[in-house]
Image 1 (cartoon, helix red, strand yellow):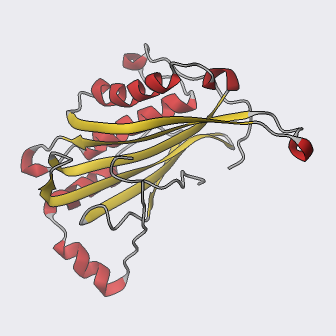
Image 2 (cartoon, rainbow, N blue to C red; image 1 turned 60 degrees about the vertical axis):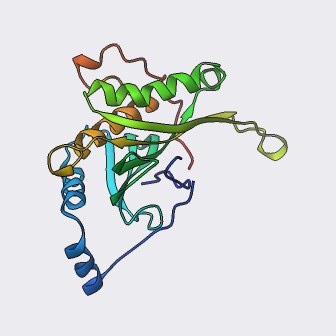
Length: 225
């Protein structure tokens, strides 16, 4: 999976990767707070639409005492339409900027048709897709923060045969509200994030309740990552 490799931060930059193995990792798991363990298990058990491939990836180790990360790609046959990374952060002592003990951080990106990338309203629309995806599932969240960036590439000289390309990138973070036992609905937040990935990729709505969603047009061919 060629998932997003950009750098992340809590309010969307630095991602350091942490890997634990063997006996040290088992001791670490035993000391991990129950709310975080439950939140991670919910992410692992979530059922998602089949066009989205999700797998664990090394998590950042400096943003919070506890973290867990996933990467995903929206795939149509052999064509990758969008990719992204979602990180769950947890600080049992709470965090003033988060206004909670959990935080979700994401990076999402996709290729665009050049004419779509030229739309001046595109950044506002993409941000509304993020908040709208959470609201559509009835999720309570706070302190949303992020940026929407679009990049266009034009090729010259020996590369002039390549068509112009454009990309949209969404970096964002938000605080999922905690339920009983201090555990947020991480599976539902993951599903909402996948809804965002699907919208950015130009997939049709997943169900009748999403029929009013505006989607981007399908991409023009295999993407080179």
